[in-house]
Length: 76
Image (cartoon, rainbow, N blue to C red):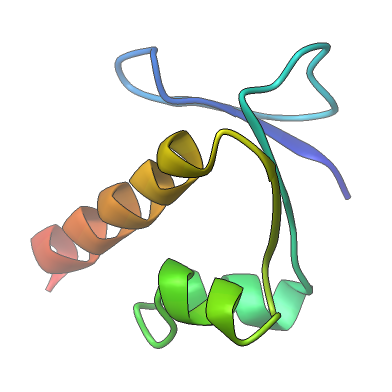
């Protein structure tokens, strides 16, 4: 499944589908995405372990990890 995420919008926009010219593209299995979203697996760790592949702007891609971590702190 493809998802597009626009972090420039407030609140961020998440929709199914592809975007024409993304800043970064992520590829990972659903099970790893769930672990990332639950705070059980960090974005950098997932990348280093080969569970996450990133094509495009790596710095912008890593900003998603910071946003997910912030959401985890706010919901606890």
